[in-house]
Image (cartoon, rainbow, N blue to C red; front, side):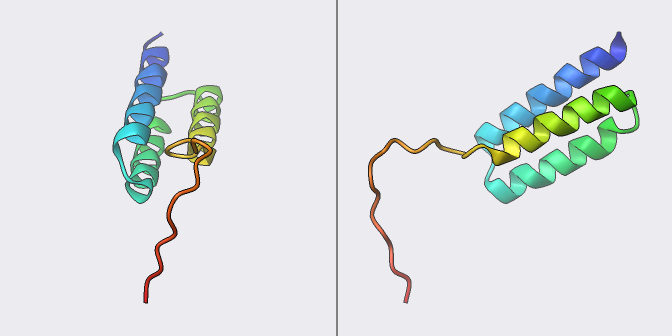
Length: 75
């Protein structure tokens, strides 16, 4: 029961980080959450959380609107 609450809290934290963090920071936050969650979740719950994180990492941060953006050339 308590581990279910922890699992849901981890998912909420990951969703919040996805919205509010730069990509590299988001990945670092995910790794920290996974490391701590491993200590308190069952193997099945940890596997579920790992899959959840992997799916969030695959998502684009801002879905493309279909418009073409400007290309910036760095010299």
